[in-house]
Length: 80
Length: 225
Image 1 (cartoon, each protein chain N blue to C red):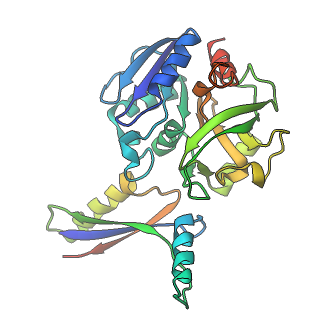
Image 2: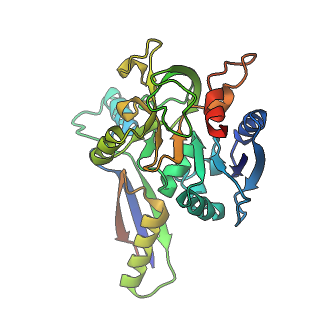
Image 3: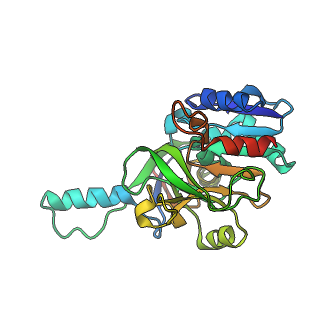
């Protein structure tokens, strides 16, 4: 079973990289740009057929290592 | 006094700190991160560098290594623990110190000598310094922007758990003297029991007037006294 995990900085944490990307896109003439937050993306496959169990496993991976819960939020999505 | 320096793949200040410790008469041992036991020790140092190439987040992988369980146990039993630069980042990843180190606000790797003010000199790490003494110590990091939640920040201030703050030559603590955007200009913090110190600046680089200055010496002499 395959999942994606998206990790983003929490709302109240400053994201200087996102800000620079935002400014650069604006300089390239892209208008109507409201905001950009930069994050991380993981694709994770687990040997498990039970979706609930597999999701719990991925959540455990996030909490144990992939995400710094002080500054980051995460979102798990099932891919296949 | 016995010291142990933990070495990870990518540590690069481990030998500098060993030289500093030996110069200050510590009996030092280097401990590879795959060891499952610590030698008998009074001080554990987690050195600077780029453990695991800063993969995932600075200090994240090193913070889960085998030896770290032993460091956590020793710290709980009262052993002194000093984390410098990447070592500070690793200690926050283990949870031994609260908060985290974000990317520098200006997105640049900063390598320069900066002014620090001693905010608490009533600890085993800082007793040989004067309160509010101004030091010049080198920083060299990309993620040194200390961040924590408002409750913990309040606690740091209230319980005197801030060790050093960035300042100017006169000791003024302001935005201009903050190199990396750290909250309240924080350069180093203690845990609740004050037996763990994490700091971004490198005191081990300031132990000899012929190559820099000797502003780092008193940190080590505080520990050994």
